[in-house]
Every structure is written in C-alpha cells, then in structure tokens.
Amino acid sequence: MSLPMVVAEPGLPSRVTVYEVGARDGLQNEKAIIPTEVKAAFVERLVAAGAPIVEATSFVHPKWVPQLADAAELMTGLVERLGDTARGMPVLVPNERGLDRALELGLRHAAVFASATETFANKNLNRGVESQFEMFEPTIARALDHGLDVRGYVSMCFGDPWEGAVPVAQVVEVGRRLLDLGCHQLSLGDTIGVATVGHVSALVGAFVDAGVGVDRLALHFHDTYGQALANVHAGLQSGVTTYDASAGGLGGCPYARSATGNLATEDLAWFLTGLGIEHGLDLGAYVETSRWMAEQLGRPSPSAVVRALADS
Image (tube, rainbow, N blue to C red; front, top):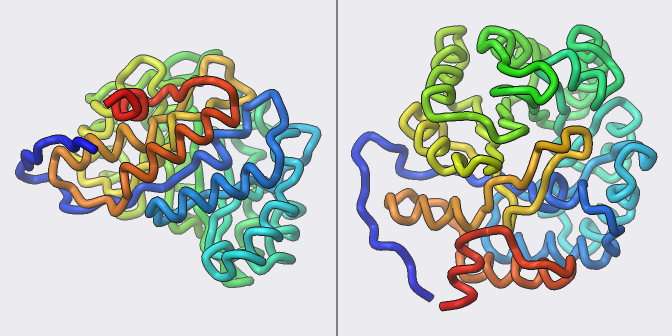
C-alpha cells in the first residue's frame, strides 16, 4: 500500500490522538437498523486497526435514536469479549438514566452532548441553552463520584442552520461551563461543516484567552464544504492534539439535515502521515475496515483515501 512522502512542518505537534466516533456518531443517522453483531464487529475491527479511543454507542432513549437502541446489548457483548478494553470505551450519556446504564456495565468513560445555540438545544435535547446545564450538572457529578472521566461535546460551534453564525464568545461560555462542571475534555463540533481556518484559530485562541489549555480541547470537523483537513491544519498550528474522526467518513446528525459526513479517519491519517505526525493507526487495516463496513451498508465509502487506496 502506498503512503505519502513525509515532509514535516516545523512548529506542529509531533503526535496526535485520533478519537474514533464512527461506531456512534457515524452510525446513528443510518435509517436501516444495523445488526448488533455487525456493530460489534465494526468496533473490534477499529480496535485491531489501532484506534486508541473508540466511542462505541449512546445510551439515548430508543425513541430519539432507534439505531442505538441496542446500546446495552452491544456493550455487554463487547465487555464479555474485550474486557477492560471495552470498559474503557466512551459512551454518550445524555442524562442520569443513560448514566445508570453505563454504570451497570462498569464503563469508565462517558460523554455529554451540549449545544452552543438555543435552537439546536431545543431540537436535540428539548431544552434551552441554559436549562441543558440543569440536566448535565447531576449527570456529570454522579459520573465523577463513580470515578468516570466525562467528555463534553459542544455542537454548532461554528454555525447553526437555523441561527446562522454563532458568536465565538457564546461558544466559549458554553464550553467553560461544561469544564467547570468537571468535564476533562471539550470537543468543539463543526456540526454542519461551515468552519474555516481563520474561524478555527480564533475559537481556539478565545478558549486559551479564557484560561482553557489547548490540552483540554478536541476538534470535531465535518467535511460538508471540503474544509475539514484545512481546519485540522489550523488546529494543529494552534496546538490542539486531539481530533475526532469517523472511519470511512460515516455520519451526520439526525437533528440537523445539513450535517453531512464526519471527517474520515483514513483521510486524517493520510494527512498526518504526510506531515510526519504520529497517530498510531494502521491505515491499511482501517481502509479494509471501512470497505467492509461500506459493504454492510450497501454503498461506497465517502472517504477519498479509502476510495483511492481501494483502486490502487
């Protein structure tokens, strides 16, 4: 398999962490229900391909995301087969009921999903920006009391399909509140893919100015307008070393139709390899995994690198 020539760029991090979201964020918007055994095989293939973190599922009510109704069954099977590796996989817990299910299985990492905008908070959580914290506060507190790490997602950080441009200060306010509640890391989401490099630099800079270290930030890009890798570059120049990505570019958001696929993990790995930045992923194994998953879904992978290497 061919790989890019390595030409390092001075001043960039030497290593990044790829936070794999394909099994949860990637599959949640699929209309046809995917068998639990296929999801489990997908997760296990991602682990075997070197993914250091695999966000496996979400303990959300089946009414809202039917695709993830098998979350407990999936995680039970993964824990039986993978043991501590599976217990260390993050899961989304939108509220205390979701947290209860994670605790029952002995899982160690949870995530909550906030919105930077009023409209999306109402559509995604049936709450406003302010009242979402009333739900998160006891959930995060209980998770921390049980020794779990909690990641905070903030959606609509760069633009909202209903409200338009989102003020940087508004995003920083929501993010800071999640960190103050005890989240160990904050993932800043470009939910509809409208971010540009200057905007990324400005947002990261605003968090730093507000006293948040770049080591506590992650970036989550969608490639709707083909800007995801350029935005990763801006993030690297700002010192961010954790990037969310989805195997094969799977994903979207069930509550925002303009939110198309996530940044493909393979595209990110190729990009990082060319810059000489370590990421720990086996690109060949990743490509094979995404090709396999595309067969299960009955359509080609949207990842440019998967398509290119499949034809090479």
